[in-house]
Image 1 (cartoon, rainbow, N blue to C red):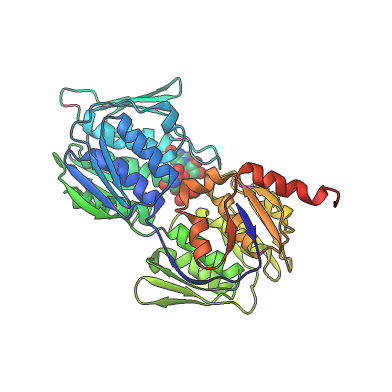
Image 2: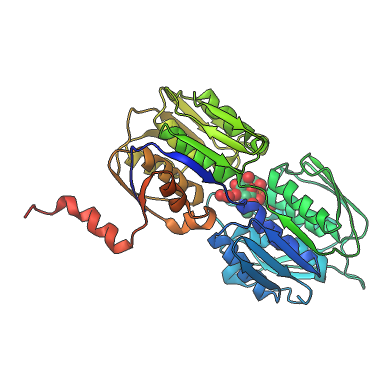
Length: 434
Ligand code: EPU
């Protein structure tokens, strides 16, 4: 991706459906033996991969634009394909719904962005509490439910930490279990609430999603649904940082402002005017000056770890010293060194980044190390003088729906090029003039 930075953006950006909701709703559709229609599904490589996982399980999947039809009536395969599951973390969460439906599941340990160890112990312990026998061997998590009816049993589960994925896995598993399940210290992220609402739209009995205690009373079966995914708060947040760093006037919709409270509060603290227009739009106006600020990432409703990298780009050009404490993942500050290539002044010690604001960034070739790191480099590139070339687009395409085209439509000078073209550009300055 080539970006010629330093140009303000203007106009309207349509925010897509939430990646982390859509993916887990697709896993949730396995709970239902009738037609499930999911709307507002973003165009992402991860959605495509998750569709491949479902197809490999024998599930019917049909996509028409942003509408995804899933039918898991005849699915009988409990073994998910290694090559696909190791590419995205959300596919592992389907262990909950596969086990609930079939009483047996073989799930390779998950992949996803390399931002920390990302174990699955909380998922496993919760399923064991519900009566599953679980063993991890040769990289595969083998789970089955003993007993003649192969049905999981409701249980009281306390999560050591409010893991989003573990909450979702266990909520799905409990939906068809025998009796009542209580998940305590549950994750409160909007995507957890969206999954609960999706399951409820199919007849599941779930209470308390969005709080730390979720109660699920198992039902015999779920019925057909037609459900719309919530807007992607991280995509919206990324556009807000892009608007802030380029001093732009942007209108974003649809959004749920409540999902973005910590992001909006931090931007306002940094001096960026954000206005709520109607119930589902946010307008960002050019800031007079960007003030330094500190961030500690936390589970929702704290500041989201997924917004940490784009905010680092913003802090890199703020007036004064900022500090980021990444508490959710242990290896999620790798974009700092790439931002330094663009002229930022960032030091990292453990999980803390010290950012000394500089007046300007200057374009350079950089590489995104994970999804949000790549997004942070795009944000920085939009503000940097001259040309920034970003590699690592395979990460960006996992989680941003046509980011380059959306930026182009609001005036960014941005272009996707082939590897060969970027190499020509990189060597160009060193060639002797003819
Ligand atoms: N953890 C454990 N054991 C577990 C599960 C998690 O120790 O069994 C730890 C993790 O290692 C991590 C912390 O708990 O340190 C939080 O992890 P969590 O389980 O909440 O994250 P996740 O479910 O793996 C989802 C999103 C991430 C997002 C996090 C936190 C999906 C597919 N992914 O991951 O999204 O950062 O929640 O909000 O929903 C992204 O979109 O770029 C992304 C990485």
